[in-house]
Image 1 (tube, rainbow, N blue to C red):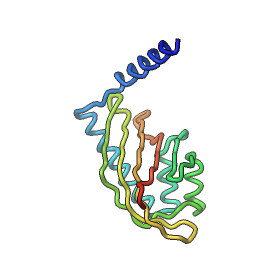
Image 2 (cartoon, one colour):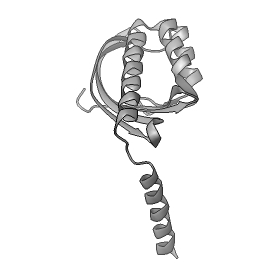
Image 3 (tube, helix red, strand yellow):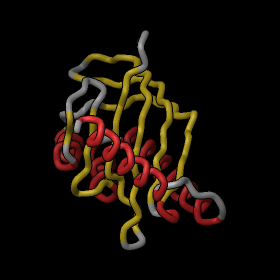
Image 4 (tube, rainbow, N blue to C red):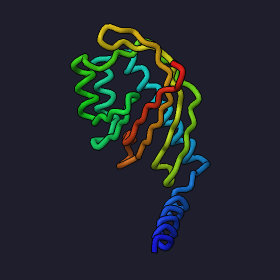
Length: 158
């Protein structure tokens, strides 16, 4: 029985993967361009901080955003936006993002992007260097891109 359940789970998983094959071509390139522009805007907003950053996330994050932070805590969109507006969130001082890997799925309506960020931030008056890997999932709904998942993973040896 256990073997049957495992086999059934594998078939269902593989069927889902088969439907969500990465696409190429003009739709993929347009989606990649859109997401990289949004990523640049996000970095600019984060470096500005405060209301500018809060407005960016309020506009571009989905209402049901799942965010996993570098300390393994989880945040909702409301918590992120409120933290930025109140000034209780860390203030990004410097950041260079690179190594973007962008994958487009679902006929150009879902993008998964991974990238690296190296910089510094201030939290509770203490400045620290940061080096993280990020993963964002974007969904296009009604012609508008919304980020629905964001994870931050610290790179060991910071």
